[in-house]
Length: 147
Image (cartoon, rainbow, N blue to C red; front, side, top):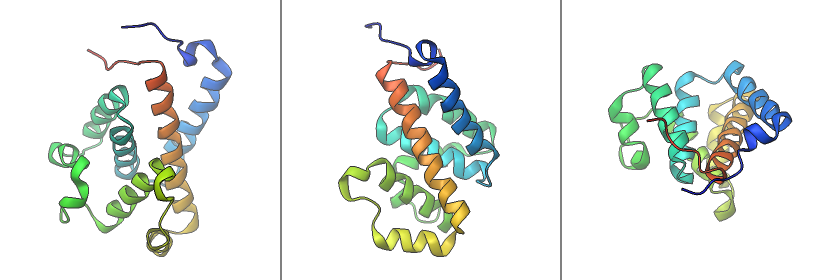
């Protein structure tokens, strides 16, 4: 495998800023379940093996089930496995991660804003933005899952 720059080591100020975002998400009102679903789903869409591995381990530690993790890639097909709120969080994760395709559809945003207060919705979006940034750092640097 080719060697690539490790931004986290090369740019400590950027790393500190990224950890600041991660710390903000950790201390937010977002449930651990919502946080882990966001991290896993965005990482799946982006194809970040390093992050999928890390966040699968974290999700299991926080009580997530193997079935829900395995089926996360097909979450739209299993309507009774995820709550209404989780489905909105996952739909937002898909939309924000793939924002170049159609943005956030108006009906999805309306449903999200009717389900969550402004602060919680902002925290959902920031969590999605944060994991997408981490995915791009890990993929650019060819980070590998732990063995």
